[in-house]
Length: 398
Image 1: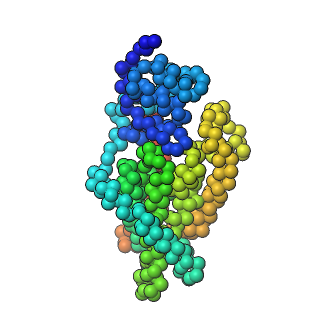
Image 2: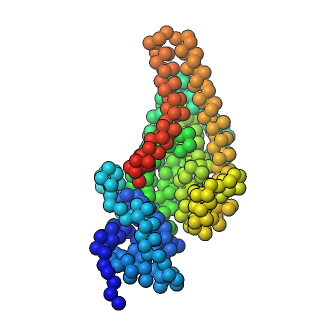
């Protein structure tokens, strides 16, 4: 039997990568950061297209693996709709390599994530936990955020700490990705009401699941080391000014680590870790639809999406709703006990400065800086969300 060869289809299929993650096959376009999970017949279909360029032969081979007839034309249309078979758009940003991180060899990066390194990270975590449990006086509260005589300068220092520690956290994700050969993209984004630094490690789906854990844990690992060092310095009894700064650093780091474990609904590092351990592909969306179906009525499109989700994702989502909702509760508690008191305190101080200080005075400018800080904390996330939504609609955010 002869089969027709479609050179154009073969060329389009050649753009795809095909990899196995232990449970499903991953089809992807690494340069676009687009990946989908398919069963084995889908992978056979694509590899056959890459080899022969024949839609008919690819359909036959996929059907043999599936044990039943498959619709090859429909599958091609699905891949095209997902953006896997389209050529790169001229206006779309190409997800390239980061030159300076590419200069770090995988062997050099791997030294930071070997058995000895992880033993050190675990020891740091145990030390920090022990200090916080047995030395209650070293547990920080929101008042420790204002550690300088001027709340305005304290807020500015917090901003600098956010940049510094955020960069270190993401750099460790970068390096962990480099250790397993995964390039990364760095950007500023948002999670709920918080502005965050973000490392896009989309291509990690091409790596075996048992090699992904270190990448997901890397940021929290380095945060824990910095926290352990901070608490150790506080145990030495430094001068009051230094101890105040260290308390603020500890508060910042503890807040970040707890947030990572609570923010499952916002796809935090811990969400990626758990989704990988549970061998799920789209647990975030499936859990959200499952929770919504129990509380409200799904739209027809949402019902179809939930029915089309993987069986394992739907099975796990039935109970993953519990930690999902618990995470929302913890984040609300953090907002009420840390963020809002701090913002109210800074806002009250700023209003007092505006009311009592002359325009152009040092107090006026300091209060203005605090107002800008509060506005940025509360206003940038929705602005970033709007910006990303516009990019998606324009087809520029892939």
